[in-house]
Length: 383
Image (cartoon, rainbow, N blue to C red; front, side):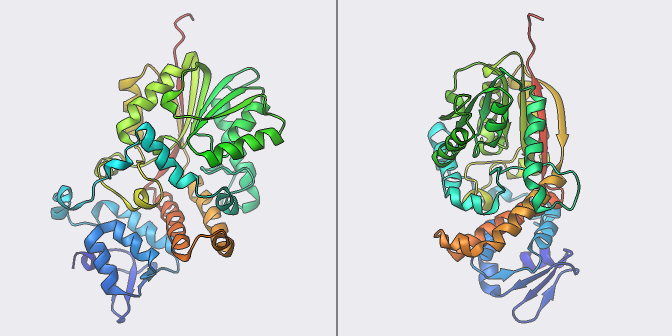
């Protein structure tokens, strides 16, 4: 009854197997197995909604459009009286997924060590797994490499990375940022918890003739002891977990030399929605990014203010660019589904990842999610 009531008020057209239709009209959602669909949602809420898609119990011809409607109405999907009882019925994040140094290794490995070949199937040649910056919309697949490099160069420019800069990168990815920084003459230390990413990044550095300028360490950011002129971290904060945000930003402060600059790229969400989700266990945490939480701009800026001596110098948002980046990834993933299967990933996994990419794109289309580039600076008392 709660599900039907919520759907009835949405600009969707939800058609059940018996022909019954609810909603105000809009993107079509076809529910093939209503009993299973309602049962999963009744038992596990939005986790069950995602699991029902994975099981093939419902489909949508325009999956992003349907999910964007749900994202736009996330705050009022559940009636207000039930919202007040949220603490009684929502699932809490498993203690085993806390981002302690050991827990973080397991959490990162569960996603990023799936297979380098899998990510190469849908990412561009830079192997960048974060939002690009395009010159115009709609974005074209042929422009993705340049758009990813543009994103990286903006961050390196913010951090004033140049010849001789000692740069710390927290979160290596597959090495593109480290390579572009090294090509400027910087000496790069890059930290990752993914063996697959570490190995590929080192291989790319050797192939580019930059191995003498790029060190990639299999190390937690909390274990780093060096001092650097600049720090860059791209979409790493989302994996840190709210409990450890103060530690993360204190680490930036401690590792940054006086007069240094830290450039971050971060996905963000509205502060009220972040507070509502902070202690819950979500589908994306269960199946894609265990232990993570997307922060709000308020949470980032308050944490920096309260726990560090860093100064916020600049913040730029560009969420529409992430929606287009995700669209290009999703389309490529769909086109190469047979190749994903050939790597050993079954049909349920492919539906899981289709849902994940569409779910993420929908969040940016609905402006429920945004992405920021931040610049933080550290005062030099000697100046």
